[in-house]
Image (cartoon, rainbow, N blue to C red; front, side, top):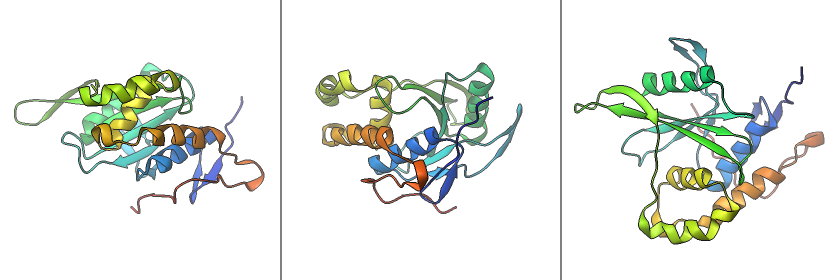
Length: 196
């Protein structure tokens, strides 16, 4: 059985290079993140989510859990993310593969009753505001539509003022990072990890 190579980046030892590439992607977008900050006892067993990205401006969730997968998640893996969303009240995102044109993104959103109590989960749907569509149309041939919308949302949904080129720079940095022989990826933002 092939085992992913652990990779050091930004003071963390990631379980795979794929996870380290996503950390670089988050850094290039200027997002704060924490790697494996806390494990949880869920109905189906213990679970340790890959990333926590705080989002102070969100009206729905105080942040996002991000799970990184090399291949499409199984039903069991997807259900763990749903359980985590229910237990914490925070949206879960599943990213499949490296950040690029083919990235598959899954968004697990919460369902609330009229009193704001969490009563379930659903596949998340994000719509871009009309003012943003021209920017999306210009870049859509070079980036996964789901990744584009996801990056827009994580960065605060800043409308047409959002620096779309940052998404492409983040993709390029994540894909081109080299970790062999102790190399440190160059051209990235200072690590913006959280201290927990």
